Length: 316
Ligand code: RIB
Ligand code: CA
Image (tube, rainbow, N blue to C red; front, side, top):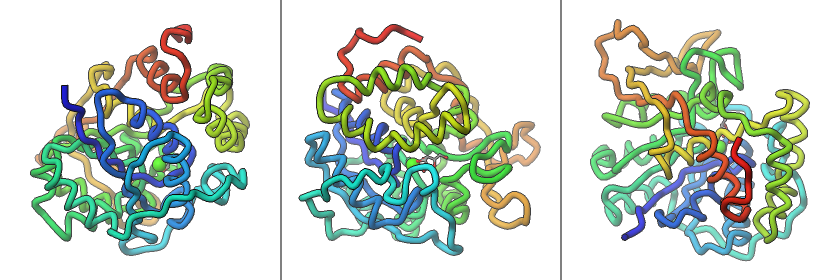
C-alpha cells in the first residue's frame, strides 16, 4: 500500500526530536520534508538540529528553513527547557548536510501541490504555516489532515498561566491558521499532561541498541532532569503525543469538536486558546480536540521510534 505523505513543521527541540523519530520509523508514512521554525530556540539551532537528527536516523529528508521570528511581536524561547542549542547542549558534531535554499513557507505550498491530500503535522509555533496561507489561501484544500500540537483548551498553560508555548510564541500566526482551515486536529498541553510516561520507562528505552537511542539519551538528559525536578515521576512528550495522534489516529480514545479562538491582545491571556465549550458563539466548530489516546499504543510508538524491539516493552 502506498505510504501517506507527511510534512512536519517543527522547532527541534527535544520533544520534537522524538516525534520526528516516530515519523521516520512509521512504515505507513513518507516524510516528504521538514519545515523548520524558530520557537524552542532560534532558527539557526532548530535547522541544525533537524539536519543532525536526520543524519542520526539515516533518513534523507529535505530540511527547509522558515521564519526566524514571529509574525508581529518578539517572543521568548524555551532554551531553559531544551538547552541553549535546543538539543541539550551536548556539543554534537555539526551536520554534514545543508538545508534547502527554498523557504519553508514556499516549500509548504509547493509540496501541497506535489502531494495533494498531504498529512501536515505542526509541532512548533505556526509562523511558517501562516505565511504559507498568506502566499496561497487555497492551501487548506490540498491538505488531507492538519494536526497541531498547541493550546491549552481550559486555560491551563505551560508558558503562562493560560497559554501554551507554541501558540503563545506567535498568537497572530495561530489565529491565521485556525481561521483558514475548516477543520483541524488539536493536541493540546492539557491532553499531554494526561499522557505522561514514567521516567524509569524512558530511561530503559534509551538503553536500546543503535544510534537513535544513544543520541536521544544524550540530547534529552538535561530536559529529563528539568522535567523530573519540575513535574515529578512522569515525562510529558508533547510533540510525541501529537505525532501519535497524527500517525495512528485509531489510537485516539476520544475527540470533541468545538469553535476555538486565539487571544491576540490582552494583558493576562495573550496566546490563550479560548474554546467555545457551550456553543455560545455560533462560530464553526473547526477544532477537533484530542481527549485521550491509548497508553499502550502511545508507549509502543515512542519506544519503537528509539529502536526498542517490538513487544519487548511491558504495557503501562
Ligand atoms: O508546549 C509544548 C510545545 O512547545 C512543544 O511543541 C515543544 O517542543 C514546544 O515547541
Ligand atoms: Ca515543538
